[in-house]
Length: 123
Image (cartoon, rainbow, N blue to C red; front, side, top):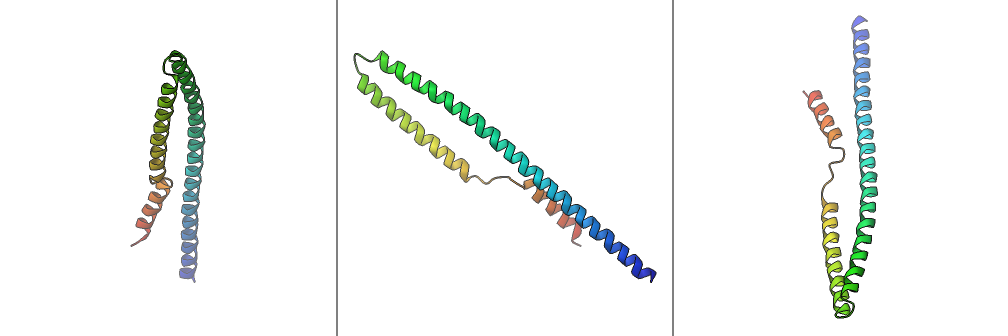
């Protein structure tokens, strides 16, 4: 009987340890998700504000250049600036597509910890 009691206690401790490991890993995963969400929101906010100010400065610069060349070549200047802005937009669009294609490192810490756990538990 004492052997079966010891076996039962050992199994209970092992199950408790496994549950503790799973709980810790889930908490780590939740922390990573929260951190990634906060980082994304902050990046989105700052990017939006920067785009607003860049857009305003580009508009004012365009108006300034057109006013400078108003008497001589205003249509040429407007066409050139429109082409320049179009090319810049294409370059930024291409850069954003390449950023979206990059593999995210989300859950990398959790996956590494789970891999270590698996290595420790396999004989």
